[in-house]
Image 1 (spheres, rainbow, N blue to C red):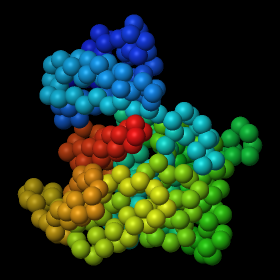
Image 2: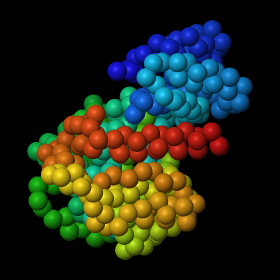
Image 3: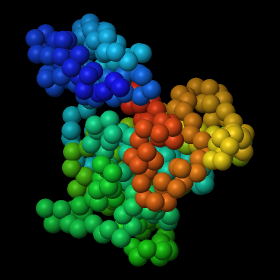
Image 4: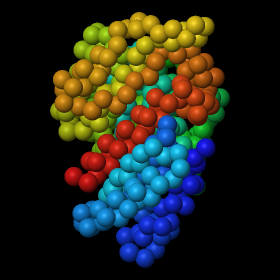
Length: 346
């Protein structure tokens, strides 16, 4: 079986940006991953030199494709932001919101698996559960009983870590099962504190699990977090797509790039016979993305294994990383990375 290390070894034959140092040792190799026989390589370079370094990118692609078992390679040049303050959050390179116009479409499951998948590709990842009224991260990551302490500066909260992801949620700070009955101003203050008063440390990506809807909380996050982009999650049926359009419109109005639409519960796979049933119809998010001129980021089935993994506190992208159930989330992470890399070069 082809491994990530084999690709890195092949890339040693390619000189880095200085024309001498092997690419993996040059500091430009930002990420290498494999998915279904395809290699994905990200190279972080100076934006001003991107055009001049195109031959290096092409050589890296050829080297990756020379590895036995690699059917195709996709090498992207990306001009990363330096690890500095983003919207008051120290040393976070990019912030990606996962949103939906309504609840019940699997947005939190998508956010959790996206974060875990990004971490599996070698990224430093955090997840902020911004759904104050219905926090899901503690259960999804199996840390319901955990309580955050203070960081070394004695002023910031230290995030909880699980499955390679740094986590923060109001669910860590209130008793389990307790209802959060707060008015808008208090909710918005809490969101700002969860963003800014947490010792996230150096992160490549902070995933924000947005609450459903398009109200004050969503606007608070969008306006205070300097979002790099947003993923909108929907199920295939028309009723959910109406609300997905509202989410897209909200982000457009606050100048947040929508990276694309992701279709969850796209179809049902029977665990007994393997039969496929399109309970909520199928393909609605793909058609809607085309209509809106947005990227379609993939689809995930309604699958018993995904539900069981979530209830057991182990997102399927972590607990069953090589499974068919994990594949849609890994593919989503690759699509998000590619969309962010493309925008970084604009």
